[in-house]
Length: 237
Image 1 (spheres, helix red, strand yellow):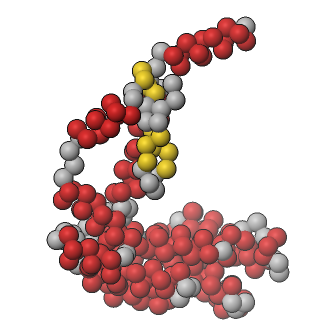
Image 2 (cartoon, rainbow, N blue to C red):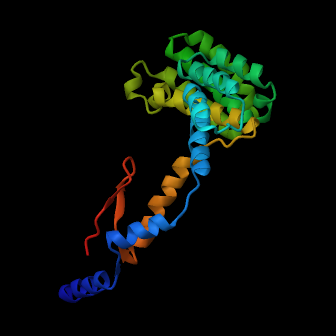
Image 3 (cartoon, rainbow, N blue to C red):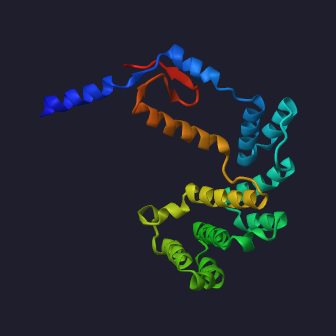
């Protein structure tokens, strides 16, 4: 039984089409990509991720125009940095300065920002202020939304533990929580500016990985195993 299974697997492997490096490189070279399109992908990544100085330099060197005003990137990154540093109230003010309709349009985002304010109060040991803030600002939102209420209860649970390292919701005090909230704010601002909230380049790389996985079932060919170098690895028949 085992020998027959091995034989079947070997037969399946041997039935795959083998594509040599020369053949594969020819196929790649036959695919024509315009430099302008590649430059737009790069600019899209720089703008979405907020690399304003690099985007400005790339615009001057390549002649590729961004689809939004680069000045707005600086404002967006200031909001993101404020959240990452725990200055949530300042971040909310900056969002309202950018576009006062954003927080009205995205109530979940507003709740998460207020939740982050509560987390920062708990982090600073301001227990009474935290409880008062939760009761006045977050509890009314929780009464109207069950998921908000559950998140509020998880956050308040932080106060029940002197040692947050043993707290089942201790991850709320980690940097990853700030980054998560900052990313949500960043996405909302981009959407309000009619810009994609995620850069296109990572999506294309994921598509490449998926396509190689599909092709692996049918052929042996030079694969890209390191996306950072895009180096082709010779096929092993």
